[in-house]
Length: 76
Image (tube, rainbow, N blue to C red; front, side, top):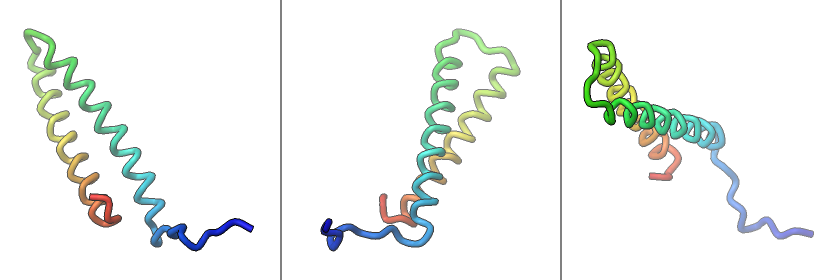
């Protein structure tokens, strides 16, 4: 019989937070990759400049959500 006495059970909803954090991190990496492409260009069109600002804001908002969820789960 396997000893499970030292295995911690996840708190209610913790697995949900974990999967959300994983998805948010993937989204954050995708935003960062697109920003990197824009940052490598010498000149940006007006639309690309707007896109860059929007991506920066969304990236920051995503990072804030990750940190908030990590605090809730005690991972921060």
